[in-house]
Length: 159
Image (cartoon, rainbow, N blue to C red):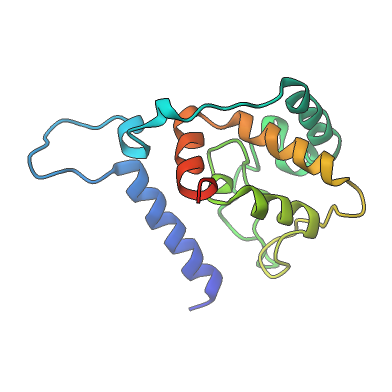
């Protein structure tokens, strides 16, 4: 089985587990998304600079929106590879897998581009400064729902 299919299946299974949650033996009530994703989301505070968020949004609109869509909503069928085997641009707004990566990985992907066997994401290291990339990443994170951001922070960034 090709590695991308294995990876995709793993992501789908992980997503299903996160969304459905694990029902405890003595618990019969339905758990909320907040409970499933993170029981301590109140402790994670975002300290984004509003000016940086605004700069990131402008940079995104000028450079990334053409592929990733308005408000980073992605393409309609981002989970299905094209004829070339590459996946279309995913949502970055917290509804796809961007929040499964640390800030360092997000920045590296923007600067170096996506893996060419799976992605048509170009490298931006000769077009954007590191500060511009930082601004875009902060703007993207500002779009994530609180539960997603807290889970990301505690599982990927806070390590």
